[in-house]
Structures are given as C-alpha cells and as structure tokens.
Amino acid sequence: MMKFVLLIGRILYASFFVAAYFLDMTSDEEVRAIHLGTIELAILTPVASVALLLGGISVAFGIRPKAGAWLLILFLFPISFYMHPFWKFDDNDPLWRTNIISCLKDLSMVGAALILTYFGTGPLSVTSTRLSGQQPEPGFTK
Image 1 (cartoon, rainbow, N blue to C red):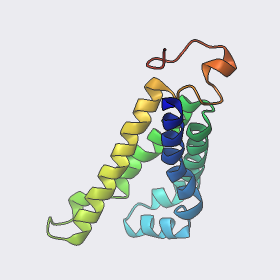
Image 2: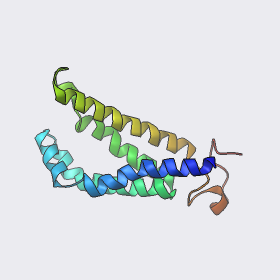
Image 3: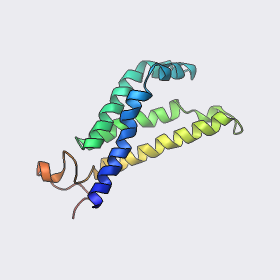
C-alpha cells in the first residue's frame, strides 16, 4: 500500500513541473524576466522549460529519476532567487510577501528534489529494482 502512496506523491510533485512547462513558460514569463531586469532569464526560458518538462517526466515515471531530480534542482535553485527577489521590497510592500512565499515554495521543492536524489523514486518506477535487477536504492530496502 505504501508504495502506491509514494507513487501518487511522486506524480503529484512532478505534475507541477510538467504543468509549468505548458502553462507558465510562455512569453509572459519572458516579459516578467525582462521587467525584473534579468534579460538573461528571458533568453534561458526555453532551456529552463525543457529542464522542467524532462525533470518532471523523469520523476513521475521513474526514468533515471535522480538525473531528473538534479535537472529540477538546477532549474529551481537559481530561479528561486532571480524570479522572486523579496529583498528588493520593503517588508510592508505586498510584493515582498508574494516574492518571499514564492521563493520559499521553490526552495521547498528543491528540498524534495534533494530527497529524491538520495532515495530515488521507490519500487513503482521504470528503473525500480524489480524491472532492472539492480540493488535496492538507499532507504527502500525491505
């Protein structure tokens, strides 16, 4: 039963990134990046979009999940600070609250991805021990 809970949690986590690829990484994000004074991010948006999609699919299906988790980390960690510069606003400014919450949300997702890099995705994945014949990943021994 718990292996299904892990699978559902993994799919819910990954669905954010796959949905972000289709919903958030549009020209609006490029405009926002330019508005924040980060033209480099506007140029890198297509690359970041692909990292989101590949990382999300990798984690959801358990196809090389540790590599997928690292892709998500490489995207999320810098984006957390570049796109949500809470330190540029006064504490009373509503944008401070919005940006710090968004930054912390992104960093919490980095934390979840770091956990995946250590434990992997568990028994119900394409690269699970039952399908590949590999040794169990740390933390998922019986």
